[in-house]
Length: 81
Image 1 (cartoon, rainbow, N blue to C red):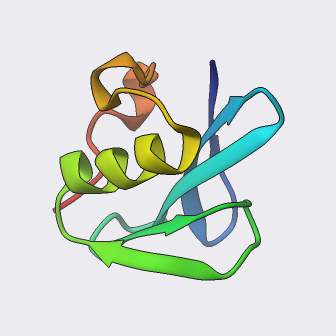
Image 2: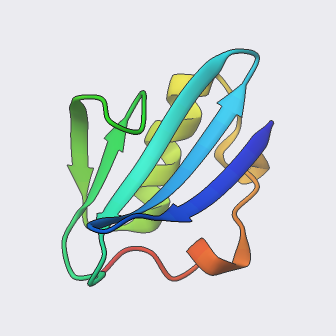
């Protein structure tokens, strides 16, 4: 399991990669919008969540892992409302 945090011009993105599968939790750069869960960084939105924990649960489900096992970089720890 590998986690990557990146900031683009419009979003903050936390990407998880596991055995060729990807799950992404994205939030607007200002940090006020709901979190979006996708299977790829620029992919279609699967669901929106207010809480970071709920978004992580969905990402873990997509990857078939326990949510507690997702490595969250410190820079991404404040995502969510």
